[in-house]
Length: 468
Image 1 (cartoon, rainbow, N blue to C red):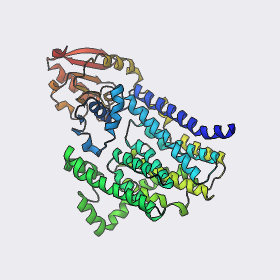
Image 2 (tube, rainbow, N blue to C red):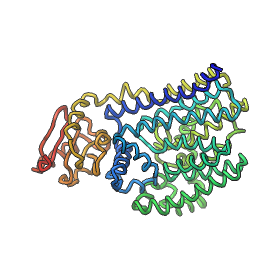
Image 3 (tube, one colour):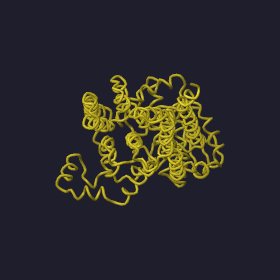
């Protein structure tokens, strides 16, 4: 009895350890000024403004946050900021969501009749999948919550738990409008291959409904819809410049589709995606991958190289269905590796090869020589006034109505709109240069409303005289 209890509680211990490690890593990265405006500052600003009862207009995107991806999930997340407004809530929620997904993996393994030790092993396979660690370091994205909610939706479907199934789908849809396509195709999988007619139809209905509501109502209301669509369609401009043109070209110029799909970057991407679990994939159990068709298709057809790696959020909706395939293959005893120790060794090798833990001894330490000065400068910003700063400092100052980035194009800003200007000339940030920072400093020198409040180690803080 005691041994059984220890085995059943082991998954909770694993989840807790994972949560602590992931949170420490993402927090340390943030403390080292390696988190960025895109996307941590964007979402921190939005959630903070919601928590303060203010309209969440992103000063980075220049639109209401719902105009980006119709991510309603930010509203319940704002409840945490009501307790205490800190960006570390987002990092903690992200670490929790990624770690907690190991529990439905464990229960799915149990559903398929696997032993507790094998179920624990597959939970570790999930947690050691390199993208889980890497995405935890890449600021914050609501997509991480969908990894867990998709797995719970799948488990609820197997359990025939209608309430949990609908709740998990609603959580998934609230994370990003495009996930409605994943839900639709998950419904098709449940309907056609799992013989879950009722649940499959519910998923399809909810997915289609949210796709229409989010893309035809919410996003157009809260943003310049044409500009928003253009921003995303530019990744597929070789297929056309509009949805109708893309559809026509796919129909009448199929060679464009083949050129987009069959190329070396896509082959490399598929290898990266599958290698961590290649030992547990079987052609006989690939049906769950139907659910990942929208995500996989967009990543393969996109010209954006960021959609073809294990560093960014774009592949996250694929992971739950890869895990289901592995679980089904293990249950059928069709895997290449069968002993737990060899499965874990394979996962560890892939983790060591593809996870970016090495950044903590390399690129994350690049700006360490300005760390103290940057913190001292930030401590002198005592109000919620408007700020102009770099992409790496922005997440530390994003809890305010207006914050802009000192990047290419910012030299044309009217500096009078800012109460504080904080610059790092030694490490100016992305899409900028020391020369641009010098140009901004010269422009500040021509504006007599600013004082140089702090300077040390190429860190410069300017404050409006009127605000002093």
